[in-house]
Amino acid sequence: MTSGVSAKSGWPIGMGRAAQRAHRREPPEDMTERLAKTAGEALAAVPGATVVDAIVMASAATRGDIVYTSDFEDLDRLGAHFPEVRVLAV
Image (cartoon, rainbow, N blue to C red; front, side, top):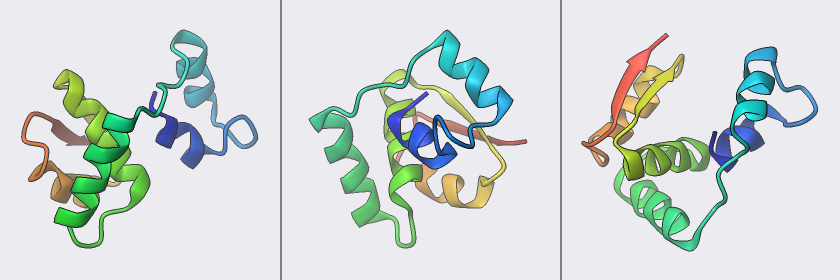
């Protein structure tokens, strides 16, 4: 779980059960300078992108992850900047 996801979910207040379980299994990823820079580059390149979405995608790109989201359109637009990330709708 990235720091951005923790921030967006309102952790610890307002965190849903699924997010609580994920947080117990794996604490939030630290925001590194490199991660912040990569997310910032994506924000500059993708009009309308949000900070949290850019952080999620930048983090996933470091591992070539799949991102599952109900916000498919926004993350899919960022996918053009992060071709190593696969975005799937839930």
